[in-house]
Image 1: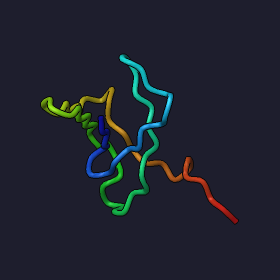
Image 2: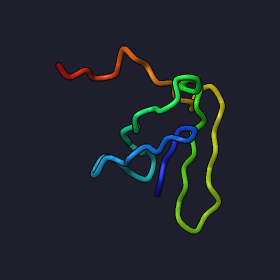
Image 3: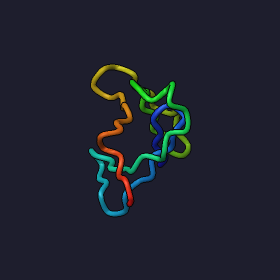
Length: 70
């Protein structure tokens, strides 16, 4: 199973997924111009990928939630 928001992969969190829920950690965004309302893509090997771009399953990067190390 692989998950992505727009062009950015989302790494599945081991032990945090079930048949009805997936938990993942987003990759860093590389292009500040395309960080909002990214559509969800779930790909299960051997099946047609699932795409969702409705308002209840899009992702937006937030600088307020980005960790900063000093």
